[in-house]
Amino acid sequence: MPQELPGLYYDDEKNRYFPIKPRIPGSSSVPPSQNKPLSSSVQATKLFPQTSAPTSRLLHLRELNGGCFCYDRGRHSFQEEFHKLHASKPVVWRYGGTDTNLTGVNIRFSALEHTQIDVQTLDGQMETEVLLAGSIDGSLSLLKVGSQHHFDYGITYIPNHVWPFTKGEAENGKTPPYVWRPAAAPLRMPSRISSLRLCEKQSFFSNNDSKVQCALITTLGSENSGGFIYILNLLEPVDFTSRLDQRLRTVASFDHTIWTADYNSHKAQVVIGTNAGAALVDVERGTSKWVCRSKSDVFALQFDQTGNIVLCGLRNGAIVTLDVRENQERIVSRLTKLQTPYSSSGRSNRRKWFEIRGLVSPSHTIYMPSSISSLVSLQSYDQYFLASSMDGWMKLYDHRLTKRGAVQSYGGHVNSHSRIQLAVDQYERFVMSGGEDCYLRLWSIKSGKMLFEEKISNSIPTTICSSFCFAQRGYTVI
Image 1: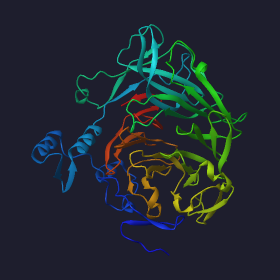
Image 2: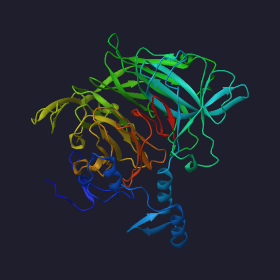
Image 3: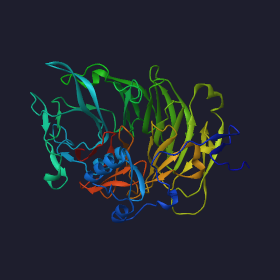
Image 4: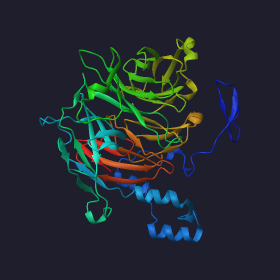
């Protein structure tokens, strides 16, 4: 057995030591085992208090000490503490009626993305903020978001203030955005829309002017047919008077349920998670190959930055790492047998075995106590990813240190059986999620502190996008 060396970790497959990079600056030094899920939201607030230093105190400390200062028995960055303070006081608006179509039929949303695209208007081409929403009945809608609410056609949804409860505490002088739906009926898919992913030309870390070139859309499938994969062209200017199906292309279909998908912009590939494993699809050719065969459903998927590695979150709580590079195809048929440390049914203490066929790295396999509901890879720290399970656990992991457990834990999340998503802001400072108790919560990724916790609706906000818009029975925008 290789011995533990300070500052190094041992890779079993490569049979050598590698240096350990320091953890995310500012992350908690408390062992992950001490951060356990809390049954009470009040206990969670006490364990993870909001930023205690007011704005005036932060400014005073910055004037005396510069960008870094000591406060409350710790050393802090003024910029980070200011962002935490700002995030702990969000302004929330609800757009009632956006959950129904033009005939008044309820179309509760199952997927949501918020972005900016080029739109063709009577005044010419302009960049416009939009919401792309998919519903449980298969309807796909493109809604315009803006400060002006007067349009010649369509329906305008006026925002209602939700939080803070006292309007005087809201940001002064900031006009809430309006949401507008075109008069044309939404595009109907064969079944429920299971996932929506925006595909950019380049990452925002390398080019701030990156444009969204398309949207990946998958349908869940039904009793009569399996799931479908579609690509929606968003690179060309959008005309709201035209139908969306004119820019929609069918990539492939499967005789399986498609739970989730992710897009690899490096190679124009799509990886999908199904009830039979994970498959890799060539967007241009429409050809597919199975990179993972499993008896456990793949509920969550995520490419890494290189596009060579895929994280798969399974129904039985395992998170496996797949190598999907083309030069590895010859050994994909290798059978890897993994053992779960718990019973998938929850009624027995017997250890269960499950088989995965594919290029899986056993040394990088993680087990969570319940089904995986969401996975998010961090771009600024390429070895880190967030994971949540259906029993309420939320954790931050390092690919290189999976045997040592989680790097960070986030307390207070409430879940038991829903596939609730996690959302991370553009600068990867905060993570947000809804709970089955109808609370909306926001944590600092680095410190693990809960910055916001409030019940602002009577339904579970299961669908959240990276700009912190979430859908329940209507839109709510923060």
